[in-house]
Each structure stands twice: as C-alpha cells, then as structure tokens.
Image (tube, rainbow, N blue to C red; front, top):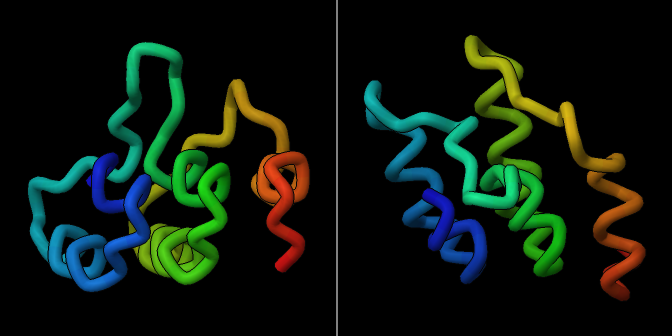
Length: 79
C-alpha cells in the first residue's frame, strides 16, 4: 500500500483497500503512512480514496504529521 500510494497507482490502492488484511496505518521507518505519502507526492485521488475508505470503518493516523493539505501544498501540489 505504501508503494502504491507513493506511485499514485489508484487501482492498486483500491484493490489493496478491499483486502481485510491491509493495514492503512502501516508506517515507514520515519512514521509516514500511505495517506501522508500520497499527499506528499501529489496523488490527490489516492489520498482521497484512502480517506474515504478509512471513514467507513478504519482510523487513519495523522498523529505526527501536519495536515495533509499542508503537506501537499509544501510540496507544490495545490489541489
């Protein structure tokens, strides 16, 4: 999920989110989550998909990161 979010592979993100064993809060060594990485790389559709999926029954961790919008803007993505 981390790699799909980093690369903006929306279909793969959606496919993985459909699996019960997918951890949307899986973190890299630096604490970055798939949502953070998608926003950091300007993949708004992936980020929105992760948020929408997590609104259903999972909790997205934002704990150590600034807002997703702040991250996107700081990397030059203005959507």
